[in-house]
Image (cartoon, rainbow, N blue to C red):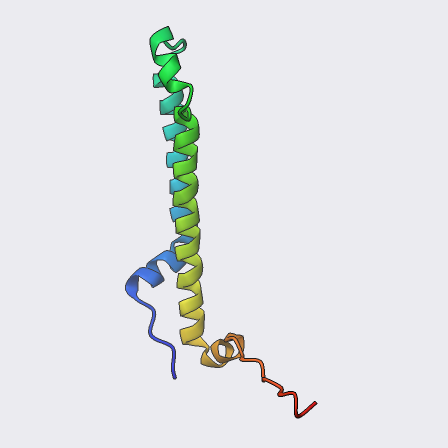
Length: 108
């Protein structure tokens, strides 16, 4: 069975991997600077009791950006794999998981 043709989105992500990741990183840095500038220096005493159990804004944003980066890296990796498998079907057949042969107890 021949591998399917990569979609236009796969070609886009594989071709423009570095600008996509660079732009995402720059946006993350700018977002972090925005959060740091807009965060109040001293929280009011009333809100501290409620906020003490929640995550701080920079940490929540960092975790969100980590999810974005993992998603982008996964998409880029899968796009490159689909392009590689389509351009070289022999290599794709070699890298597929091979089923282990079951040896029955009678053969032993």
